[in-house]
Image (cartoon, rainbow, N blue to C red; front, side):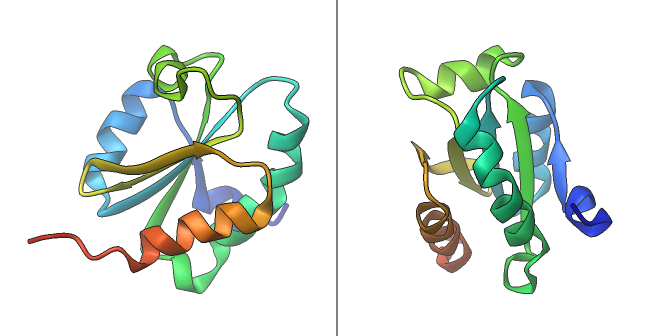
Length: 117
């Protein structure tokens, strides 16, 4: 993993998530879990998306759902990896995704989203 990738994906916790979704206009969060093969499989594309110039206005976050009860509750009965998009502190979309194309589609919807002012 390149140094820039690591810097663009911010590891945080429940409290950090609450602050960061209000500090940034748009946030894309990935909730992971221990020993999750799909989480590991999607880690490189997630880092590449974070480093992609077209997604620079979006803050990329990663949380371990096993260690963060609010993240785990948001997932409800879903499994990791679980992706969540926010705009202006409001949850737009959330779902368990297992393929890079699905992650890109959700990210593109967030990028294209125009908030109501």
